[in-house]
Length: 308
Image (cartoon, rainbow, N blue to C red; front, top):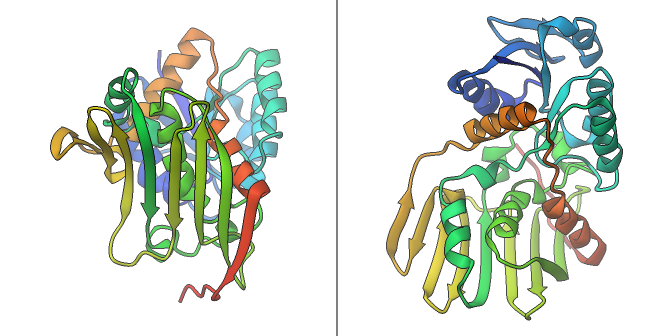
């Protein structure tokens, strides 16, 4: 049976990832789009989610690709209408707003899937398996990119709830929390805010686990020499590096995994599996770490960010 999906919010991430990934996954079909500013060829187009939900026979599930600040109300509408819901990352603007969505999904007997696309990168599961029985000595995350390249014109990302540099940084946290054998907790946070913005452009974090493992993270949106998306784990069997956002896995210079990106195809396969099994998947751990970073964050004001 084909899973018919409607996308809400046809922005950059939807056009670049969701639309082509749906087309590549057997048993999943894009049948409608709701977006104020864009249309998709070959499907029914609506301006708002309310208009979309007025024709429920068109689709079985909704993929919410709108900014996190508005996603909660849209998810409530879709779940109330008995539709399965996929949430782009982060699942919401706050941690606490997700619990009512979970409860409503249970009440309506539909699936709620809070996605972390980086967890579906090819190096993540092999890294998790390698680290299960290893002695860990330290972890360092370096996640740096050019905001002008990867988030052009996205003013919402600088507003409260938009997360700033944590929008990509949360991808690193989603991988780290998937591959490390024990949970970690934040111990310090240094946040750099441009003087004209309400969200940070850089962050330096430190975590520990119950054994005292030291985990550090550097997130920066001011990198103009190319992207750095790596997690390095020092172990009793060598240095394991999850590189290039999870595409490559390297152990002491030996390449163990080097595969192309297929993250969003993995998301839609998982979504279809959850719906078939009648289950949900809502892990808030990466978002909780970001919330903690703001709670503990020492604020540093840096030069203004001007996009042009």
